[in-house]
Length: 436
Ligand code: GDP
Ligand code: GDP
Image 1 (cartoon, rainbow, N blue to C red):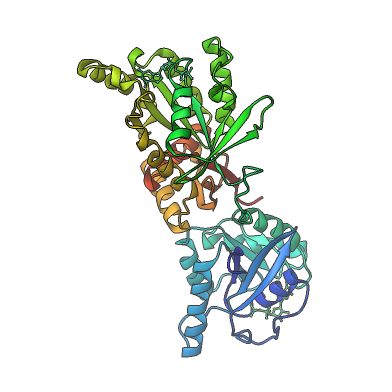
Image 2: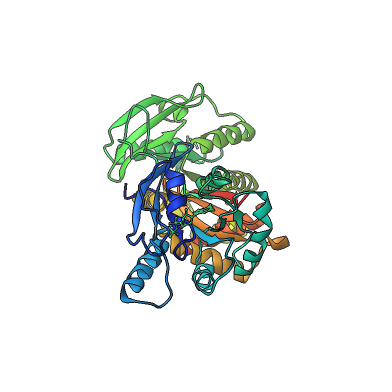
């Protein structure tokens, strides 16, 4: 229950909060009386709409100043708002905007999460004209409802459940048979760069327990290796463990194969033959892997064959040709001698840690806000609120006022990656348009 998303109902007394709560719950659990301040206690009830459970919190009214009891109630309201994922601000449309409403609105405007102004007691169309006055609250277009008669509440709930953060997937047992929860690694690179040599060394070095399992794509064989950082699933290892391998053939074929593997993978090890430098093919492959949203660890292999000058040259080329990889880890290794290979698991581990990262909503919103201040979205596109709805991989849900162009979304993604050290993991960005 602790992890249910929270919908808070706020508003001054007598606007219809309890009535709305009862309407949403479909039963009478709160006390409804025509007397201000009857519903003193903060009430939390589990509710559900379209199969989506959430916690509905009636904040018990909001009173500016007044008695100690009033203050206590107001404090509770503030607390409820801080915990909430979505806030419903109920206003009595028949009365219009009062001083108290305006004060509540001030607090809510500073809030970085979806807020809906509900123009309550709009019992029929003849009352709808009343709602425009509520625009003055500065919280967007009011939603006309009648809590008493149920008018508009279904549509409202549709909007609310869409705005709730993603449901947590049930924690799963790591299941070797299915490969669930196991980090998938793709070893990619042109033919002859040393992928098989490296792979066999990884198996050997760790004295690893190795399982073969059918790959997700046809004809592919994946290998799950138990390592000190947990099981790793190497994607499409059919060719790698056999002594006499089918020739991988052309660069083209190895590219297709690599990209398929990358689709399945959480992280790619891009193996480069340092004796040949960083070639155009390496660059193309890296671009494609990066474009598929897969984080990359770069391995400069056969490093032991290079002299000082050659090493400098290769590192220079790396900066020139793979600059778009940003902060991706680069390891200089020799798969043949094993030199530097021990650094591979820590590098993967970083990437895996990032994969499991959970970031508090407030921090996510801080980064998004700063990013938007530094560079506002094109054509007035704005993210109003953001949250990390899921991890494995980190998945961010952005609530926006309109469609966010892909280039701007990439910019925001980059900012999130930098702020939270997520360079080494894929992340997912979801955009929801706020309101209807
Ligand atoms: P709260 O103090 O904000 O929880 O308000 P209540 O839910 O107790 O409602 C206050 C009064 O407004 C009650 O008499 C309700 O019957 C009435 N009320 C609530 N919603 C509506 C509505 O949609 N239309 C009308 N006409 N009256 C309503
Ligand atoms: P793959 O086609 O990418 O799987 O490459 P292989 O693992 O078959 O390696 C191709 C050739 O490079 C083989 O002759 C390996 O022995 C050699 N090789 C692989 N890694 C290294 C290394 O670190 N140093 C040296 N000198 N040779 C290597």
